[in-house]
Image (cartoon, rainbow, N blue to C red; front, side, top):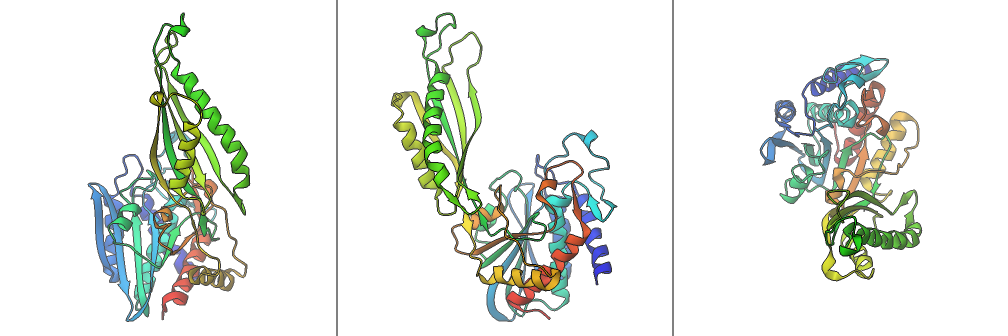
Length: 386
């Protein structure tokens, strides 16, 4: 099976790489049409779900004859841009198979996992579908944009509400079952413009911001080292700092954007309240600053004794003769939109995270084969399969 499976997976991935889907602009019509056509042919009930024109998502369903869990698979179709074309040793939109690797834009993140999931969906249908429950395959856009038109839209519209959500990710076929939350906030300070030769005649908005950020940093330096769960740490980062419009003018406005990463037991609303409280106690005039919540999602933690996690542990051991590793996530996935739903959320797939967003990214064919075989076994363990 492995030789034919390798050929099938490489063929699907080659097709996907040849269908450009970079963000920006984020257009996903062509690649979603490709996935939808294959899934309809396999016998799935398929919907193209679209919130914003040009940003398509695929939802495909196949039900069993008996009651059982709803298991959803997900991979995002969008990629980052090519970047500097000169850094690529081959055509980024043409798959290159060399040394057991498939090269191309999105090969690792996340078209390798998408190829595996498309093969998986077709193989399940070929075997007669699940014996119980329902399988849902979702291929979504807008992930690289961290935007609302992809998985967030599917969840809010009620199209995808699973008991277990399995997201394609570059984990080298290990598991990520816990993910930090994220909270973004913007601080704006006001001042009074004046000539730089007479700074006392104005009110420097940048200096006011520096005092506020200093108060925040002092607070977080004290409390965040205590917020640790295993390898996960609660963190803060000043990601953007803008102020002034000319060197010889006392700045009248300044903005800063803050990124807070939260442990699964920390909540976004509480993190924002904490930040605002520190700012409000810093002693600056209330009329001269504002604090704005930008966006955020809570973290999640799938218990390692959960049914889906257990199925992966058993499948990895059966097919790879090893104990699965539980990895620490640096970034965030589309699973965050389901963080408050009380479901098992699992990131799993072929490829290494260091390959994502890099020129000449690649995915090992051997890992794609293993990912396909492992997930087919997981489906058998969760919903039954011939």
